[in-house]
Image (cartoon, rainbow, N blue to C red; front, side, top):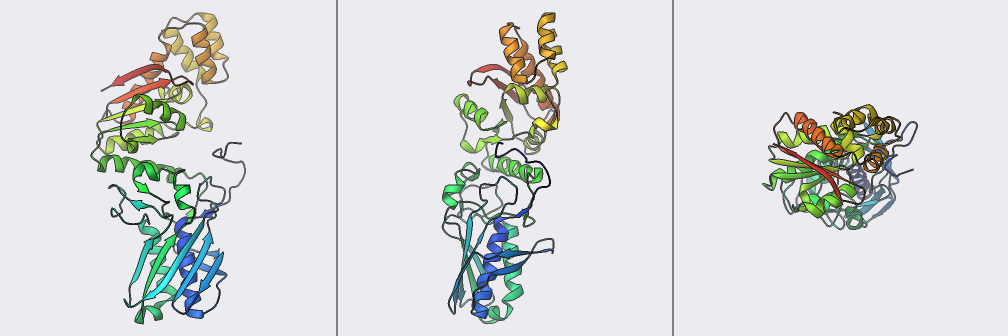
Amino acid sequence: MDKNEKPQGKLRTGFTTGTCATASSKAAALAIINQKTISNVDVLLPKRDRINIKINSCEFTKNNAKCSVIKDGGDDPDVTHGAEIFVDLSLTNNSGTVEIDGGQGVGRVTKPGLGLVIDSAAINPTPKKMILENIQEVAGTILKENGIKIVISVPKGKELATKTDNPRIGILNGISILGTSGIVIPYSTASFAAAIRLQIDVVSSMNDEEVVLTTGGRSEDFAREIIKLPDHSFIQMGDFSGYTIQQCAKKGLKKAYVAGFIGKLAKMAAGVKQTHVKGGKVDMKFLSELAKRCNANSETIRKILGANTARNVQEIIMEDSVNGFFDEITKEACNQMRHHSEEKIPVEVILFNFDGNVLSKCEKT
């Protein structure tokens, strides 16, 4: 099974990197206060629930402690699953203050549009708030006389970040400390939608006006060969074509390229806004109607109606030399994407074959 394919049955939830950092911080504070090793802590979550987190390592002195938690993403296919999140906590002379920063393996912000200060550590507001609340819960007495400095580190963070969108959106040399609820919901569409919005925000904040929306890594690679735009302008929208183009329109972008293969583009052409394979099969009747427009003969139509996949239809069209069929696909996909954007953004749809050659293009303004 593909690692990104949703497994069957009830899925196990996990906890975010923000929850890991919070648990490590709380354990470190408790280790200093109690002068003993902490094995687990209860973390207060943003929605006021609590979760018990196991502490993987805990070292301490009178004024310093270092604790870690192993990230557990549950059944979500997140690259940070299994990563060890460390916190170095030290007491300072700045009484009543809690400073939070990132160390090794936590990315630094280099571009606007992320809701974070440029040159700061990529620690999102909710994890910071979680850390503050949980530290204040157990270290109120310490904070009357001392300050607390927290440095979050992820030893494998720089390596893991290359498998995320961080380099593309301007977070360099590490992962982000994330989480809005503290809990990881496996295969969350909300998380994916939030990631898309964030990437579009970066494009807008960089004053760039064009974006390239692709259905995955291969189509993005092919698109990069023919469209020369900055790295952050390429966004893998996956199955969320309708949602993504709507967000582009809301941000006032001036053009969206949409690139992909026949399976996803055939669904877009038929008006499907969410193109996951389980979210709706390719409509062979719809494709047969497009073929009729191109004067395909009855035998070709019969084969299309009996085809197993869109790729199979592509093979039939090429074998039977049905001229204009791929242009019908891109034209209809273009019409639909323009419709989803409420006609607010020009769209150019590019259909690739599986070797990266362009089968058709269509632009609507």
